[in-house]
Image (cartoon, rainbow, N blue to C red; front, side, top):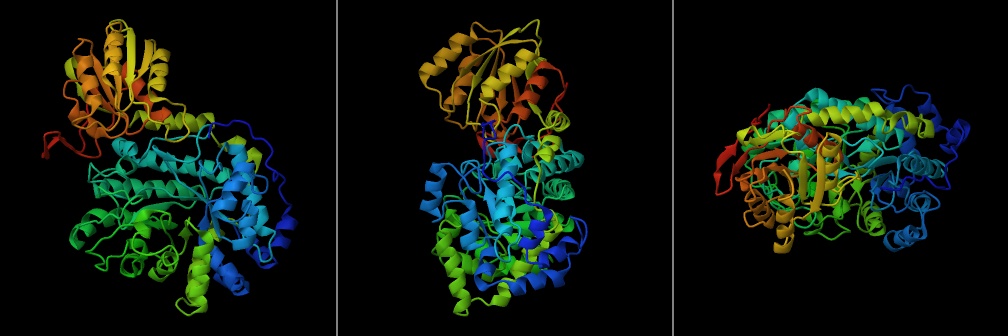
Length: 610
């Protein structure tokens, strides 16, 4: 993610338009002439003709969206070749496409797909060239998790925005739309046409380990409005937005990556709390919806996860809510979908439930052959596959992939991480920072009275390829604003020795800024703040993830919430501390009292200003 050199990818040359049309065997040439990239009604007759020419193996492949290691489609590093051989049985993305004819590929930073924008564009072009060069070759729908905030796969120098809960604190539909529009334009310039965002879950459980600040908030009406706005922004830029995780992942204390959550909401509560953002997304014309690997007994009492539930995906999502777009599973490598059935059964059951895209199975060969066998043995019909393939092809057509599958380096230069886009991210961030405590009007912090600032605290790994560490970013921003700042990284669980060092350093400072990360009642971070306060120096606590930290920090002179520790949000917090901008964020979730969770300490909508 931090690599800045493009290097040779082995697939930088873009085929001519004549080559593209020849590679797609004439039928896609007709599609290419059908109109603009965002045509509202793709010509189903042409798409059906494509489906009719596919072999059964090609049809099965179109249903899968798969990971693949490497920065290049044809010439990845040896370590990535080895990883591909071990996990997928192929060497490269080009070989993956030739063997399995997958309809989509998902990019990950850990798979070394997203080093930097020019390389990403080359990789995308290489993938399209490899797929279109096959008999009856089709363009590939390349996808990515770019939620912003704590989940993003493409880092600097691309523009990185505040995450959903920060946007919820800003409360601006215009900002949500602008975020989607700019982020979508940058993804599209790199060849990524499907983004697994926005999160439509309503986070009402402070202990939620997997959603939390990835949600816009706890008010379904506010979440619905921001979901719809972000969808409009992304899709207006020609990128398919994906509302997730249906039917709602906002009230769980189990992470579906590692366990199998159960949502105990009644059907009535689900209709009031969880359903509205998905209804709003559908009304906004959402291109795809992602399923959740969790059980909702009130919606389906079979014990199956929603991803494998026909009553939920077909009965509710398709028939009740009237959605006819693409349904994509969450990653099939997650424990929530693997706990009840084996990896060979999961893809078959997902298709029977109503899924269109099978995302990232742990064993592609096993999953691909399981679907193939299910059709050959009559458990699935080829007609059932055709329904999903047609939805996927409609989306590819809508996104212009038949007309213009390739991207250019000039497009990257004109679009990704431009000065205007970076400035927009800063402006949006400035409207999200939330001031919760300001005893004695300590903030804005006076440079004359408090010129020397010590910045201490947690330094979790950068969530999305930003600069980091958080204490360094905060200190650097404060220095630029006229303070003299020093840093001491104390971590998420500071030892007694580390706390003592921080206390000693505080005595040489005029004020302390403490970055906190998910503070609990017994957390050493709480002890750190208390001992810093005992020095007599004013302490500004900055909750760099969950805003609930403030309930555990009653002695701090001031408390801010940033909802993430990406650069853009930390710089905004520094400007608020220095008084360069006023705090404007309002809590999108309630904060309960630490010793009595039934009592609300700070309600939704709370936030101080200057």
